[in-house]
Image 1 (cartoon, one colour):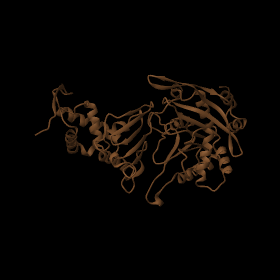
Image 2 (cartoon, helix red, strand yellow; image 1 turned 60 degrees about the vertical axis):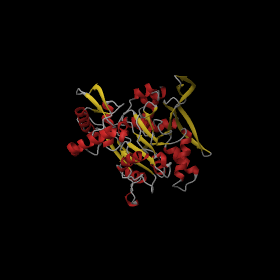
Image 3 (cartoon, helix red, strand yellow; image 1 turned 120 degrees about the vertical axis):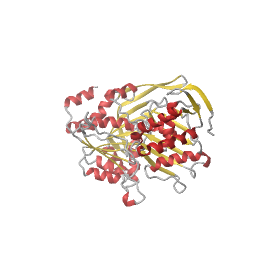
Length: 451
């Protein structure tokens, strides 16, 4: 006998009464229907199959007049699709352009970080610790990673734009199930006008960074996770002339997509994107260092090492010191701290003394931009600074621009940061000389300095 919870008198999309049933029963019926009739149309790429399979789910729900109490028809279709493709309710968040991260603190506590900076709990949750583990294991399987008792923490990816860091029992309590951070690279590319309207930077600051990089000055974007470094870097890379060759190197999954196409799909610019390859067989591993060595043989005009985290730091600094215009990111608390962080990372794979490493770091990346996500969730480019020299092992910094915080207000129970951008100094004469030597027109330099 069919277990019908209730008969809802509202008309469905096709007319008639909606029969409310438990979600598990509706899922079972839909799975059988899709498997029997459309199994061959399910693809590994969720974006390719989403619209088609979603339409079949909706068709079945409408024809059978099925529903779940407290769930709208469209939402129910999304949940069913998520369960069928293996990622449960997470599917509805993974491919949105306004979601930056999904954090699973435990099986029944899932928070979503939106592009606006808001952190909101999901309406849905997993049904049990085991359910949460099963879904995350299926996600990690896409990148060949296994989460089990032998390896209770892994870093994997679902696609080029979704990075997963997961821990399971053995590191977290058994009754919590797991904890996971799913980092989603926002596919939206911001224009200069949007950065300015959001208050991330002024137009003059953005122009300066773009001009520096285009005329051969290597730079480092620094700040914490989610401070906006990658989004800003992506905009800078989009300003590179189409005839210049750009090579990007990333670890595990790809965040940059700098290929430009015309209306017919033809590639306009000159870009190569590399990502590392992990393997249990050391001979099959392709590291950041190996890719950097490879990239240097391919005559790049511009080189991007997505992040300095380990042994690749020294190689990236050496590349920047040998005439390869480079852009990179690092986690540090400010512009000056960036160089100490670089030197410390290089120390892990080098026997060079601190003074030598500091000299290499400051000469390789003379300009640093520090981004920060403030208490009100706004993202600001807090400082652009040039290192003009090193004295007694300490970098001597010249601040070009900075964001001055003047007050913190409370509006509707939330903090609001008040501040303004200030131009502090011009670039040093030695940096201006380098720009001129690299082909920067005098009129452009004068316009940049007078801004």
